[in-house]
Length: 93
Image 1 (tube, one colour):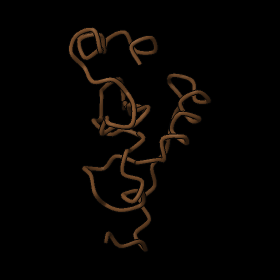
Image 2 (tube, helix red, strand yellow):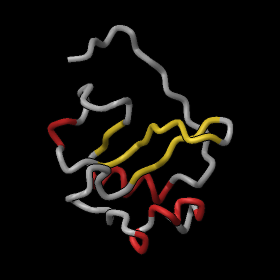
Image 3 (cartoon, one colour):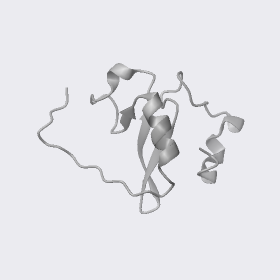
Image 4 (spheres, helix red, strand yellow):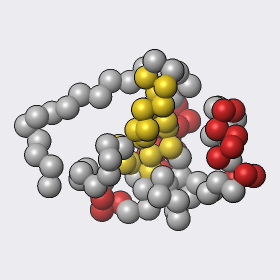
């Protein structure tokens, strides 16, 4: 992550941050969502709790299976625009 976003160095493993992986709440990878150059605090990330995917269990992050977020992380270049669309027909559980 720090290789893609050097400004995150203060949160790196070398500075006491948590390694990605099965024990990390953000799973194997996390894609940080920025808007107008500012961190929105939303993420696309893996999860060690696969049963939580598709449920309203966080503050707005999008959870993926760890193998899926690893694949997505490798495919998506830094700065790729994303669009989040709220589907009002889906009710939170």
